[in-house]
Length: 447
Image 1: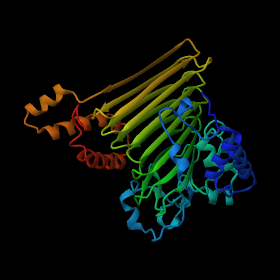
Image 2: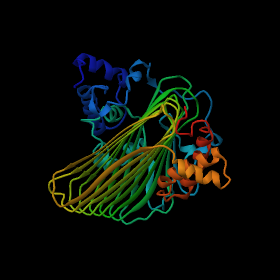
Image 3: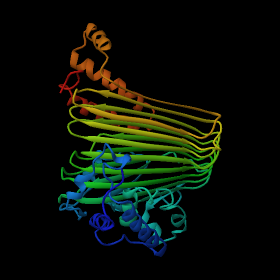
Image 4: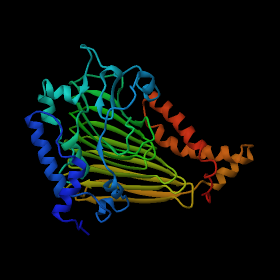
């Protein structure tokens, strides 16, 4: 069933989000912004009548008095961001309410094997590479929030790795929401370009410094050249009154390797659309995710792996842990195009439900138009294993600790795929804190 809003309704909806003005930038970027604005009106605000949004209701955003984030009342200093710094031996770009803060960031020197900085600084300088890659992968013609971001973003992160460069230090992109006025709209934008034979590890982090409700609308584009290797770890732990809408789009050239992690514990509603397109043969994508939801949280992952070329592999592993009245959504699509012979694609979604009131909607999908392929998908929903719980108790372990141990073991399947030690350590601490609060919910009949 299609959206029943009239064209005028769509224009009003879009205008309320755009705030009347396009973001800054040179002429080529303004042309992209204007096109994105037009596309956002044509698409219309997503509703539950759209199949892609059937289980994720973003209608409350229409009722918010959204506004551009204002500078926080108090000055953000280094001590405020310390708890969120994960790449202490690497590089870090810090954004507060979408504004780049160079005094809080750790930028590479002139001799560094990569270029890291803000998008605004790039388009105000030599913006040739930016013009080549920015807004070329995120699909503004079908994604309302990606179009909205392209029209509105003020700044963002830019990472470019030259051919054959191997960057040992991780690069962290840290976005902090600090507005004290409810309804701030933050449009975060990231562009990561890994040229031929290069290698880099990116940590993309979102957190809140207040408990004020806000909207984060983030778009990350990744362009992987031939034989490039990128590990991209995305952690979202914003306050549980926030809305977080994310689009991650990768384009993978010949023999490239993309390792993606999506770790979601925060926000009242979090929607993550993660997509990759194989544009050359021999590529590999490993998409891994872990989402922990409690209370009234809703966490949604939509993935699309588009096998447009032959001899490519994709493996997806998404794990959900749901407590209280939380709601999880997973929709994974694998497309195998007609010429994409010798494709190997696997998709797994596992969910652990800790309360009779928690809900998961999972829908793995395969659309295969080639005949010489190996493709599998599967989804499971279950509760804690009573036999394993009994075994641990028979060894003298208390019931609450035994339950936490089983939940942690379930989560570790996703955590162990992350190669970045600082991120794993951060997650260990985060998981401990989260599970300490689930003591009364960790039974198969808990509330």
